[in-house]
Image (cartoon, rainbow, N blue to C red; front, top):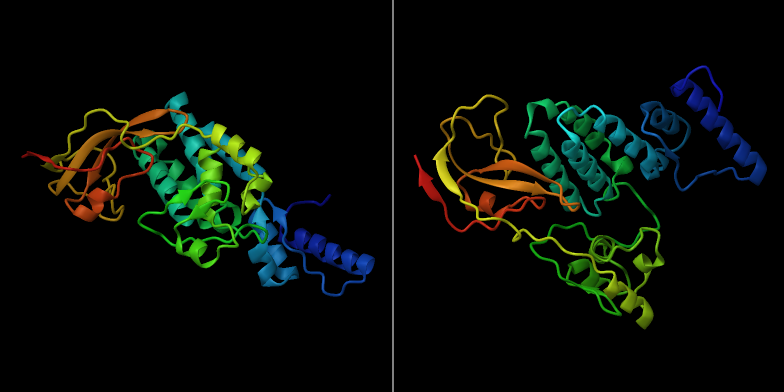
Length: 309
């Protein structure tokens, strides 16, 4: 489309002309597309909302290309080293590819933890805040997809997925809907069996023997939180240090102020491509917080703390 500038006025003209052209061509007075894919510029969404029904806007998406383009542009602004550039790119990509909302939140926590490791990375908070507000447009866990398997996005303490010729899952959704695929099975196929996101295996209720054997042979190495060095959890008063006041790594809500009683442990943010970043994790002295270990870390489960006053 050629126009003087890309703004709501000209995009409204474009969508209006498109709507009328389709009506005339197909003699369809109720032109109601499944959705529209565009970039994240606000003028696109404002124009769509003006010309079409609101539910079309809710069904539309931003394209992966522009999100990845933003990642690469922002990555180029990082001055703290190539490792930090790769950590940011990996976490930002995983944010988009999150299958469930809990997975999205855990990845966002890891990205925020990474940003907090160096004051020269704090400018990334603005990037994260901007995209987080629009997550329904671009994140797989939130944006609508009318051809996706049924999802159970409820947070569960433990979900067991059995990958066999007829896959099963212990989640309530799969139990009540045995003829549908739950997102836990899809996530397992994508994450641990390296299945392509366009593969029909993601939509099958069962596999042939040859398909299942191929799946078994494609199982990727699974990283667990137990792969860590000796770690000491220390109960201490928070010392006064320069820089941003840290939040609890467990609840993410409480700020740990100088003089506060807290538990800290030195560990690493560990990504799937084995890039690592040294981090001091700080927790409220609360059992609920201490149980909430960040997924993208090498921390072992908390057992006891040494006292240091």
